[in-house]
Image 1: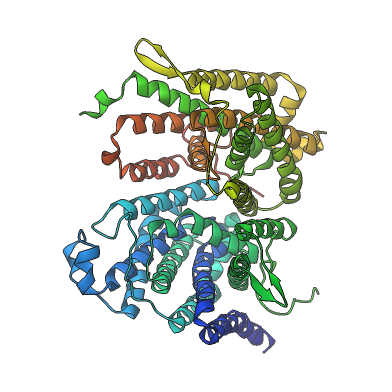
Image 2: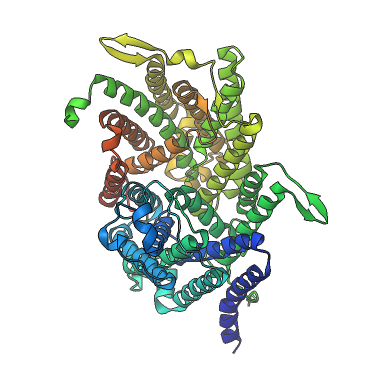
Length: 334
Length: 303
């Protein structure tokens, strides 16, 4: 009973927090809404990355390439038909002549991300440590290069605009779906096998865990979720460039994950919300914000403070704000 | 125009110059990795800080300006060791790497704030620019700084070889790189070895800062960022576990980028990064421990 309760709490905690952010987003002024939407999409991306990095313990710099693929897949396929030939003249005919709905495009984005991750992961999951880090980084570079230069599949180096914007509901539900899938995976047999291999690869292999296969499943699932989150991102922004889903987003989302706590779902959610919340608040403060007294900080402070706080958390609490634990009462040491 | 014809002596000379700079950066990154098992992503920001120092002291005599650059970079790298690396020494490589991201991000944002005070991004470092003049040798324009880069790289690597091979601290550093715990048990003082490695990597960063600033006198907050990423790739592809393979990897990737950039017209090279990074992946798959590494050391800790 107690164990069941703890399990429920571990899913409900993150879910309730996400839902609360969505709820607040739907009541605040239109001007402030964007900050909450940002936070929700950040949660979706960071939790998607967590599914692979957190459960496997293998660092990947490549997950944002699946976010990018998903974002452009969902974006290009939902631009209204009448504007398509005007702004995206070089597309493959099949992409140019069809436009799909918002929800369908999210599924497409997830499929694109998942397939891509599977193909990439098939060879790459044999690597670990630094070699894996650099190889996944190479994947990010290749994705960015292709998206930027290949105008048959997207806008190339120009901005993709006129993507229909979706509101708070889609972002909230989307983030909730990602959290729920991540939770289901980490409680499943596959998830546990992978987590065992994270703790001790040699021992896990010795008891029959196929480390390569387990990492590949997680990588594929994470890729699909990343693609989905990319779809959420593009429908939140309405327009996107390849630079927005590249190095900076990679570093920022990884930092969110590590700040929250690499090894738990709760950590991924907390990290994403804490860092993006702080970022938004300081962004407002640069324009001058009233919190009892008027706080007005010089432009550029936001980046410095976010960077300093991230470094500080990592130095003082290297296992993250949550200590890498799920939400719940501390287990008494018997 | 065939590819081969386009690679002329000029391209080769420039590529060697770039390779030399990247080799120096690779040594700086490799030294710290050896003793700390830490990939310092913020290494490029040390170079950036040095470049800004040169820009802000442009009115000083060149020697003074360069001295200030060394002082700032070495000071900053020692500070980084004390404030960041030391508390994190016992933590996982992932945490250490991401922390150096955060530091890189922090230093870059500070640079941005300092830089935009005059409402423009980018500061010119004019005092060291004369080094960028070219002398013509047999029809090939060689910039003076290329001599400096290659010369400094050879001298620095030679000195380093002597230091690591012939001195007590060098022996201790090699011992620490091979097995840190055993080295400590045998009386190697951890702080001293690490401090020394960080000091050397700071000296190298300052050297690189001077060379890169001469080549590209407009200093911006993302100065040397791209170079650092390329060098990191080169270092891992070469084999980060040993200093020489890491250095060779750094040189190789610098030389290769130089040749490719010089040989291909820009409109034909749009998909080149994809090809290069695909090659990187291939090398890593075939030789995960590094292209130049001997044997295949699977880094699985055995109980």
